[in-house]
Length: 266
Image (cartoon, rainbow, N blue to C red; front, side):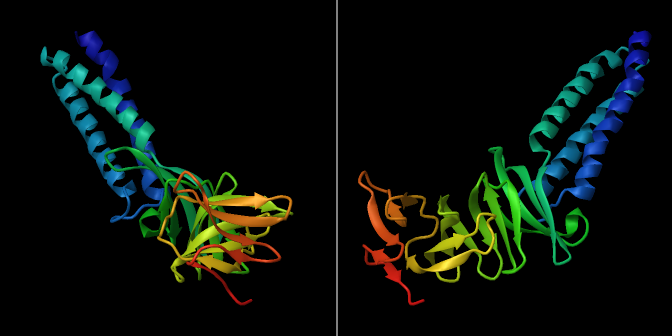
């Protein structure tokens, strides 16, 4: 029995030290808020699991000279397994990083809540991890785009605009479409409380609102953009029913088809 105990004693202690390293990195380099959206809470619970492992290791070493040491071995290995699984699922991943106006912006993918859903949060940081503030959170987002000219920070997800943070914050609906080397996206503009069509260049910068908008409820997931290749026009559709409703067409001759649509003066 003593030989078995001596064999496991030091490797387990070294393993505990190895478990500490991810949490040190997490504390120093991963953005989080004390009253945020789950990253700080996940960190605190991970520290609790780590301390539980430490407690079992201490009990194992104290009882190593008696038969009670046999009963502490399963507790140690179960705790090791739980800590590994927890880190695999809950350790945040920095998807992208940018520096703008002396501040650091991080796009962090992390688990959220007891349902273990995955969220992506944009953080603005001044110094270390606890000096960060969440700017936007969603289930999507892979890259940060900085538009210095318009003082805007945009998130994209595999080629589609998701959100723009700046003087005119907005959330995008539907996919970003390409027509004649220009990007088009429909966005909910918070200051207008309506959907506005935006035109951007192909690097997702210099996004300008076009003079047409549609007043509807926030986060209308049934809105879809469509390109008419023959006429070189952009259509906005409401697909909430079996037969899609055409809301507006934008091109050389913009047209509205519903009451809540409005063509603005340039």
